[in-house]
Image 1 (cartoon, rainbow, N blue to C red):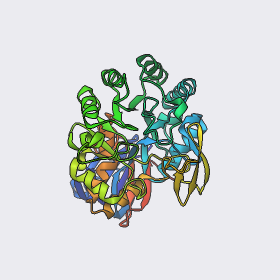
Image 2 (cartoon, one colour):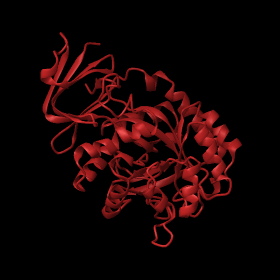
Image 3 (cartoon, rainbow, N blue to C red):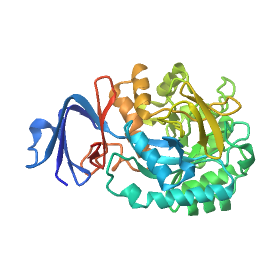
Image 4 (tube, rainbow, N blue to C red):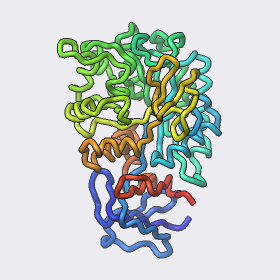
Length: 391
């Protein structure tokens, strides 16, 4: 494959902004990056001129259930590839496939299938068209609060069990990266410690925990909070609950679904004021309906309905979203977040959370050439996954 040189008006690495930038891609990796006047373009390189655009790393979505009419728990190669291609069109070049609470046998089957796909050429090989790489698995449940379950099926919620978790981790074949649980449930703290010891990012979510219960879980190893404000005990000035612990502890990263539906803008501003830009992570919580028309879709083992782009279950509860991270980026910028910081929240921060900050979510020599070109209006104008662009 010949070298590729992409010229952009600026690049947001997002450690820094580089004006009159050029990125040289060789064998799917970033070989050079800098100002155009700093080095020579390799002879024979194909040059892409996008001098009126901004070049950023591809988005990294660590909480996504599906897209393009498919749910990751369908777990077929067709389903997973469709999800990966659909979100790539919106600039997401890496994702952590997220399961929902389901019966143990169903969950294990899905984990085994997803793990098999992650290791397959369909995921790791050279894509013919831009296709997001599935870089791990996020287990959202089943060790969650019945009272804060959201739309997770109540009959499949499980009591914390180290043997059951180990069976899930075995089925995931070393690809499990995040485990969401409710720390107040008896036995959950042992899972926090066990998951932490196994190198899993233990996340607080779907929880009715008090401040003390959440604080204890953080002390024992929880380091992340899932879709903050949603499916959590509300904040009160006398009992701040899990939110009080998340907002005031700098060892914890916090997801936000910035779609204008899940969380009101003042709450997003509160999160940013408390956590700062480095600890907030944009996620989609996207479902099979992402990139599709209104209608009925599958989320895990149950049906959801989308109307006006909003996804709900039969009870009318929010059930994931149809958000893509390019739109989340636009929403944050409209709130006054500097573009480079909004980019960081959708790229480097999530990559760092799952230990991939040298490879994903960053424009740096040696990193994967997962690149997105944005127009001045922050619309996605071009996507490269491991150096491959749409033909």
